[in-house]
Every structure is written in C-alpha cells, then in structure tokens.
Image (cartoon, rainbow, N blue to C red; front, side, top):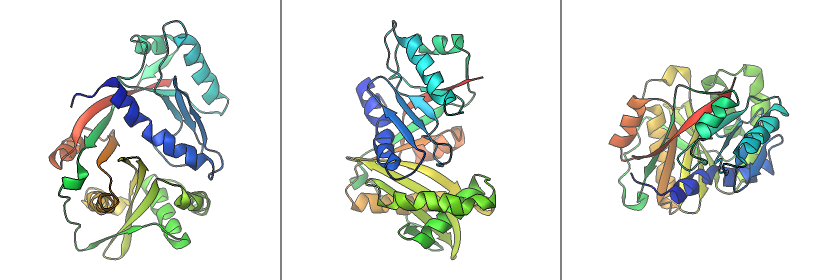
Length: 266
C-alpha cells in the first residue's frame, strides 16, 4: 500500500486528537500535540498510545534539541523516554541521532494496517455464542476494568481505581469501549477511537482462559459492524503481535500501510 507521507501523518494524528479529549476528563493524561512532535504521557491509563513520543518532524538544525526536549519531558514524569519512528519522521538520519543520544532500537516493530471502504466490506458474522456490547454504564465499566486487569496482568486491587478512571471516558466524543461475553462470561475488551471517517482499534484485552481463541476477532467484528452503521469508511489497526497476526489481518481485508520502530532510552 503506497501512502504519501502526508497520509501517514494524517493516520498518526487520529489517536492524539482523541486523546486530547481524554485529557479533559481523565486525571494524569498529558498530551503535547504540535506540528513537530506528539508526546502523550499517563502513568495509569492503559493504552498502547501513551507514554511515548511520535511524529518527530524536525530539521537537521533542531533535531538534537528536540530529542533532548523529549527526554526531559518523560524524565520529569519519571518515565522512560520512548520515540516511535515512522516514515513521516524527519530528519532522514533520526535513527542514528537517537542512538547517539543513548536510545536503543527495540526488536519488534509496530505494524499499521488499513481496511478501506468499510461501507462495502462484508464483515464476518459474530459467533452465536458471543455477545458484543458497548460499555454504557458503571457496571459495564467495572467489567471492562476487570478484564483489562487480568489481560495485562495488573494486581486485582487496581480494578476499582481503573474503573473509576475509565468511567468518565464513556462521554468522550469519538471514543467507544466494547465488551464481549462468551456464553455469558466476560471474555474480552476493545476500544474504537473515531476521527472524521477513520476509526482506530486499541485496548484489546483477552482473559487468559480465552487466549488463542477467536474471541477478540468476534469482538472486533461486532464493534466494527456498529462503526459501519455509523458511517465509518476506514479502519486503522496497530499491532506488534508478529507476522502470524499480521497475516490474519491481511486475510480478513486489511492492507499493510507502514511500520513504526520503537527507540527507548536505556
């Protein structure tokens, strides 16, 4: 899939646009959203798009000072500085500059995939044993928090705090949380973040006993069916789960868009 650099920028700007709304209702989320950098931090909010910097777009003259600004920003919050490098980043030698500053390239890249023309796409049917439900009340939030805690191996005593933090996000424009139940048992979570004609998928969590099954795919099918009814045209996915999962995404209709490489200060 041949994307222009401007199109990549457009895709990478979806999540921080929604995250700005989150920062108004969830304590501790900080979003720096500029033309030359995006930085998002939160010690507690469970999202793959927090505690990192991306869309690094500097000139050769100010690249090093911007790297130093990123380092200072995250270290001031007692967090490890991380920068995601995509084809939209500049200057061309950014990777080498990061290594000079002590950043280390991580082993697994993040693959971005796109499913276009959702309105004419035939989504797979959800298994009859699976019920997909949008999170709309406090009880759903508590269930969502419990699954997230189990999926991400958080201590169980975090669940009430996580639920308290998640509840206000129900009202954030463009954000929708979903639950799936297998034969009535809570099994998985998924969050869709919408901006204009796009929707991105995130916060996928599966209870340990349902890992290796098609639970998350049934949930995605149900959530995307609702997005389709609401007029969404393009679905964007991010994954670092490896070639096997990327192959599955291609089989169901997603096309590879670009990759991001993570650099971490060590």
